[in-house]
Length: 353
Image (cartoon, rainbow, N blue to C red):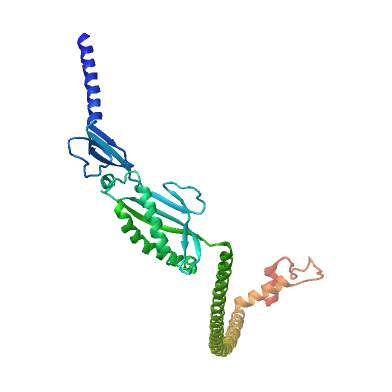
C-alpha cells in the first residue's frame, strides 16, 4: 500500500511539473488573434513572424507576447453617430464637385494584412494603428468622393463605380500601416434641407420625364401591338373564309356522291324488286299450273279407280253409310226386304246384285 501511494504521489508530482513546464515553455494563441513574439533580453529582439492559433514555443520570462485582432475590422461613418470610437465616427463632411456640402454615410471593412502583424509591433503602431487607419480613410474618402457632383451621389451606379475606383487608392494608402481594405459601401447622402427640397423636385422632374418616355414607349408598343392585332385578325378571317370555302366544297362534293349512290341504290332496288316480283308471279303461275295438273291427274286416277269393281263397291258402301231414311216400313213376312242394319245386303241391293 505504501508503495502504491508513493507511486501515485510521484505521478501527481510529474503531471504538475509537466503542466508547469508546458505553461512556462509554451504560449497559447487564441483563434481570433495574431501572436507576435519578442525576446526580452539577449539581443534577439522581435521575431519576424506572425504566429497562428495553437500552442507556440515561448519561454516565460524570456519571451514577451503581443496579440493583435485578426478578425475583420469595421469603420462606420454615420449621421446617427454622435460619438467617436475605434469603429464609429460621425458622417463624412464632403464638399461636392458642384460646391454643395453633403454628409455621407460610409461603411468600410479592413483587416491586418496576412504575415504583417509583427510589422505593426515593429513600427510602433500597436496602440494606434486603428486610429491611423481611420485618419487615412477619412482623408482618401474626402478627396475621392469630392470628385462627384450632387447628382452623381443620387445615381447608384455612379456611387458604386466611385467606391470601386477608391478601394485600390485606399489599399495603397493604408498599406504603410500594414492593414488592407476589403469593402467600401456608400450607404446614404444627406444634403442641406433647402437643397434636399430642390434636389427632390429635380429628381421628381427627372422621374416624370422618365415616366413620360416610358409612356411614349408604351403607346408606341400599343400601336405596334394594335397593327399586329389587326393583321392577325385579318389573317384569321382570311384563313377562316378559306377553310369555310374548302369545307363547303368538300360538303357539296360529298352530297353529290351521296345523292348519286342513293339514286343508283333506288334504281337497283326497283330493278331487283321488279325482277323478283316477275319471278314470283311466274313461279306462282307455274305452281298453280302444276297443282291444276296434279288435281286433274288425281281426278283422272280417282275416276279410273272408282270405275273398277272395287271402286263401285267403295262408292256403294259410302252411299249406304250416308243414306238417311226418314221412315221404314218393314214387313217381316217378306224375305226380300233387307234390314237397314245389314250394310252388306244394302250394298248388294244398291249395286243391283
